[in-house]
Amino acid sequence: MIDLTEPCRRTIEVLAHVRDDQLDAATPCTDMTLRELVAHIGALSVAFAAAARKELGPLTDTPPEEVVGLEQDWRRSYPEHLAALAQSWTRPDAWTGMTRAGGVDLPGDVAGSVALAEVVIHGWDVARATGQPYDVDAATAQACLTHLAQFDTSGTEGLFGPAVAVPDDAPVIDRIVGLSGRDPRWAAG
Image (cartoon, rainbow, N blue to C red; front, side, top):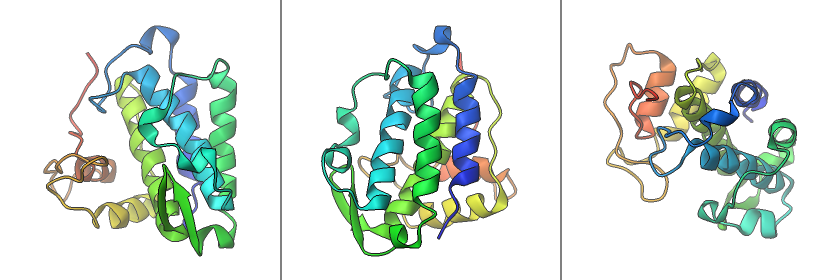
């Protein structure tokens, strides 16, 4: 089991500092504006919480590209969704058996690792797009690096672009985002 509490808390903190005038800004996620990325975080939080509870249905069947717009009260609801996501993965049975997320059937332990990586990588995306710092604790870093090491460094269609080379002694968050196909040097503006 991986504890999602700290990465969800960190992403909640980053979302709290997003200003309305930043919502149309570019992000390291090149096909999403900040508004779309924040909506994606809200939707993935609900979907992966449902996946942890094995509540298969519309929440777990909807592909990420079908997410539409920010919830009207996203500043209140998305932090709640992220907290619920972290809580849902504290249950040992979340990590066993099969589940579904984004319309894809996968083992519970894989779904939990994907949820963690999504929260961390997209939390970093939002932080970078809004000029905020973002870092992870050692346990989160190791879990993310282990998860991302399973993917082809030339890119994985629909998930990650080709890995960006990052020195071995670079900060761990740079190594994580580099493996996900993002350039850790990306800056807003």
